[in-house]
Image (cartoon, rainbow, N blue to C red; front, side, top):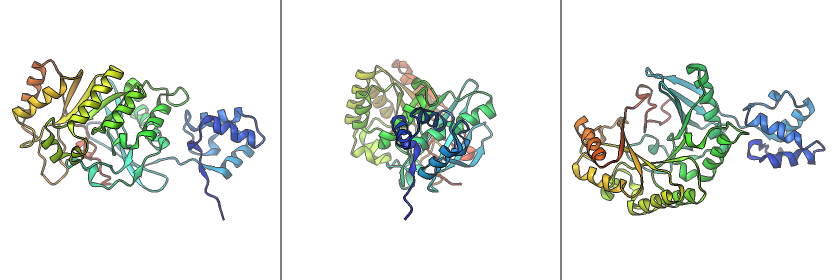
Length: 346
């Protein structure tokens, strides 16, 4: 019976070195192969040109490289690029490259589908099939970095975990991927250029704070009133705002990093003065900024973008309370690549 080959990128550098020693080779061979796998993103063992043919054959017999494949690439009229990424088991996730004048941002997925149930998000309507492995997250970033260099003549500058899935429900793999993305043995990116966006899992926010992570935190908030938030994000009943607030206070006390709140204003849901006042109060316990995000409809019309007057009311009240606020225009809407639209329609 054929034994299943092991995914070679699940091995640490030390384990790779050990493998070579056990097979009668020098330990440094493990360093060479590790560099090919991560820094050079080799898709096949044959690509490892400074490794002998016999060694490549031995690797082929023992391991696989479960590389992603960009199945389909769509380009928006505003320059945004969306990738349909096929994983080694045939499942598909989406990732997005968002260009501006000064930078290019990769929006990457962490799960196939999503663990949570936000009613305004297309991804949440797909059932969660599985978590992505660290190398599958890493590969999305490499693919977008290559596209950034090819189409915009510059390397990728920022990464946001705002694609499909709740990153904190795939905690270990997301942190391992970030470790490789920021490692000099991987892509060598600064953790300050990485933002992990969560819908708010208090226990995991505290865990991140304890581990003194260096990347930035964004919270998909959308309401600072429990009943309203639960009606649009039902899991809020399990993780209420009181627990979220306590976790975020803890995060700030440990990291001294300000928190970004992602916030969509919807017609008839949170476009009232009461909703703004609740948000102001919620923002006060730790330094924060608010991104007011344009809503991207997902077909059924239940959620509708609030009027510009309502958005302006939010902006002026937040600013008059000394809270930094940005109004974000959505990118890539024409190819379903905007916030909340990733649903593998292709």
